[in-house]
Length: 413
Picture (cartoon, rainbow, N blue to C red):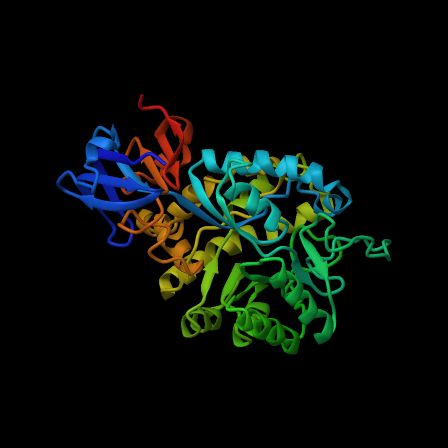
């Protein structure tokens, strides 16, 4: 791999919340080896490195979306389990490439992606962000991951069938399901512990899985040095999952003050996903979401904004998530605009960079422009600290996209 030297850069220090002017960034073997005010040298001298003068533009870390579904090519999720795996992969390849071209160099999948997709990206067979995956999200019968309609009595698919969820009931089935996902290389275990918007038979305000089952999943994850992420909307579902040891709460729209206290006490992360609700409100029916499910959206959109404000005011650590489906994937950067109305720009940027790395247990490796981190870099026109809307127009403002030292877009030359 050719070494690279980026010169004349303003580096966004996301942890420090400041711009570092006049920096040089040296990249060797896909890793940042130096960030300095003077031109760095290597053992072979920097004359061997390709040099890109970024002209005083902002250089920031590649983005991390901590809640995606890269196989969700349609908002009609119950249909995906009937598709061919090859057909799902073809759709996922386009979805992943779109994410990369928006500046996302890392994603955490909340159900659907597997080791095969992650390996295809790692080997360069598919252009896309690196994938941290759970495999199938685990659901009780009739839960958020059970995509059968009321008249569908058969499960009708195997572990290899495409789909976001897998149904399991009781301690024995749940433990085996966790162990199966660990065996397949999962980076985390996903549990559906409340109702949701896109599932056909459950209710938003329901709790799902017993506390004994949740604790069993946490035990299985911890045994493999992994963690449990939970889909949860209501305070009742959130709080019981946190008391059982969940490490990340997805959505959290109907949380309460006790939820804030438990998140802080457990050093857990909240991953709000506001852009999916806004997208569904704008285009849900046209995107293929059944009308009866579309009506659920308006019950959670405003609540999600209030929850974000509550969590931020309480000091909860948050990561950037979108949860988009089908044609709505193109709105992945809208989350910046929505959060920017509620929290400071730097905290929205941290959520999508260093906080995401912390959530993934990759602190120092991802989400920062520092020596030793992977060379996932974005070169931007405009200052996102001054105007977060810079992030929402990648076609014009995103000039270079680099992942692992490989340039996927460069409009400076």
